[in-house]
Length: 347
Image (cartoon, rainbow, N blue to C red; front, side, top):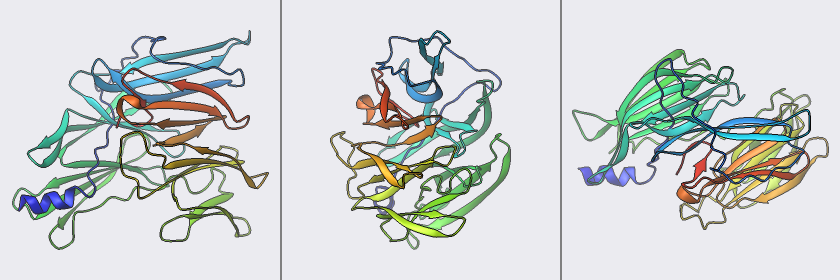
């Protein structure tokens, strides 16, 4: 029976994670100016974001801050923001509107015999105003955990566990929270994996409608390889990209003037760091064209904030973060930590 379960599991096992802290306490850590490799550019005015890197042997959270002083000097720092010995950050996740930030932690994960497990999962929230960490909820133990943002900026944590009474069934619990971490609802569903198959989670592409609701991005073909931009005021649609790669993620500038989207090769599933399987596009609404295409290789995640486009590449110790100014198209920083780093986690 367990061999049948394993066949279903290998099609989509994914461990996703975040970070843990005491209920009302945050640990800002100390500036670690030797941890990264920085390549400054004076066009970078201000910037602040959180990311995941190794701290004392466990995945923890770093905070990146940069600001141009009145003198014109560029000040920057990378701070070890939060870590704990018995907790591993498995997923750090910004809301689509960049106003909320949650993370998951786990005490342990791996495999027992042929079956995966993840234990001691907890949910936390980082206040972007005060830089404090708040404990939200114990999620529990299971075989998989996923997170997902809704277009309404609600946050979902989805946990799959084997049914205690029958190995033929998988129980799926979904917890839904608002941007402040308050529970909106929760629900559960049972799957007969022999009849229905193992429950697969399809993550949302991202922010498909611009912040001002002027434009939308979508793909109509089943493989999502033909990508269209719609002007919502008159319904006008134009093809902006067509290739063998599928739409993977989308984001916008806050002024609705730039669209960012990534594509990936669905046939490439390896994690060796050698695959050339991703591209990032910067599309100018005013110019009505793609102004930059980056063959990003193993890019995993990205988001835009201010004048910055931030993305991570590579896997495990070879993972790093790149920052560019999307208006000038000039590189700002490249962040390399000794044991790798990423926007959501270290894979």
